[in-house]
Structure formats: structure tokens, C-alpha cells
Image (tube, rainbow, N blue to C red):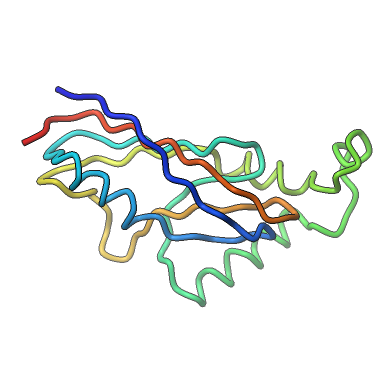
Length: 141
């Protein structure tokens, strides 16, 4: 049994930027020769989130429109009054989706569905550099 911890770094544009990180996570599995176990992913920061989705343009647009309806970016939030950074909506969106995922690994691959990708969502109102911690617990070759 091994426990490996690594990081992915992504430069984002903010404003509901959605980045597919599936291939980068899979590359870490292959590099470390992990055969079976689980991968835990965690994004540091309170205005970003991780989830899975079919990473195709129509659905990405639908997700952005849904989040805008649910938690509008053009209204005032109490957080904005306290800090003046006008990103209260970003914190709420991130807390709704959450900062982490856990994905099982079998035969050296992530057990994702055919149309399921791992995505980083950056909700902040400016570009950021995001760090995603990838911790793999499992059996190596």
C-alpha cells in the first residue's frame, strides 16, 4: 500500500472558468504505476470547486447559466460589504459544489463514466493560479 501526494497547478480566468483536469490526474496514476485504490482531489481556496461533468460546450454553457440563475454575480452579498472584493457569489458557488472529490482506481485507471470528466471550476472575479492536491492511496505495480 502506498500513499502519494502531488499537486496540479492551473492558471484560470475566473468568472466560472471550467477546466478539464482528467488527463493530468490519469497521468499521475500512470507515472506512479498505481493499479488499484482511490484518488482524492482537493482544490485549495474558497472560490473554486471540483466536480465531474461531461466536458462539452453546450453543457458547460448550461452549467454557467444555471449557476448564474441560482447565485447571481450582479447582486450585493454581505461578504462584499465586509471585504469590498465583490466576490461573495464566488464563495457561495464554491461552497455549493465543494472543494474535493474521491474517485476509485482499478487496473491503473480512474473509474469514470464514458462521458464523465473531472473539472476545476474557478468562480472568482479575476484570474487566479489554482493548486489541486492529488492524493493517491493504493497498490502500485
